[in-house]
Image (cartoon, rainbow, N blue to C red; front, side, top):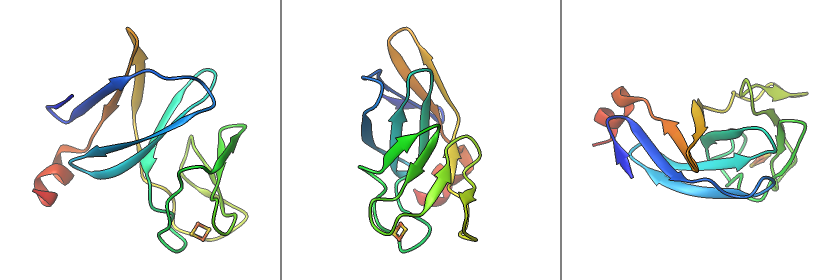
Length: 109
Ligand code: FES
């Protein structure tokens, strides 16, 4: 459900990922043991989907050419690629709440 710059999805199993379509585009949500990370699904290198990228130690490795990004900061590790755009999340009451940028929602409408 999306409203007021926030979207909620049912929580899911740690170690897995979901693609979520929002007013900000398609986001990748990665669930780890203690957090959920929401980010733009397009890799800054060549725009391929990050879905299926291996997540370890709060880092994701792009499944296409192997770029690595820190899921807590969005910064690339070991390269000079642009950072990932991250969206704040909260895990509460069996849901993952993702805070979207309302200014972007207006830009894309
Ligand atoms: S598209 Fe992700 S590293 Fe090339």
